Length: 109
Image (cartoon, rainbow, N blue to C red; front, side):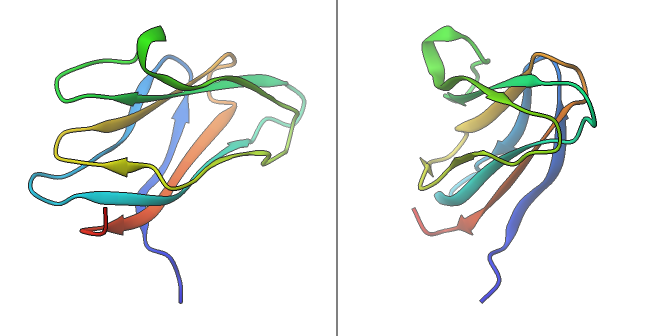
């Protein structure tokens, strides 16, 4: 069974929202995967679990900074349960070097 992709890949530089749980639909992520798509640049990726109306910051880091070598996929977080309005944000130290993919099941938290 293929896992539904919740969002298209987002290219992170500054912190951006990569997925937000919809209204009245709890969600459980099966995978949040960061891919370094740069051919030569190492980058560091941060992931945040942000409450409704909030923004990414040090207080809500769930991945404080994982170094990714060029053309690698070593960062994966699984089983993040979200309720209405909670979101996952990502950033990378090199603009457009990291793509963040989110897979999961809405209505399954």
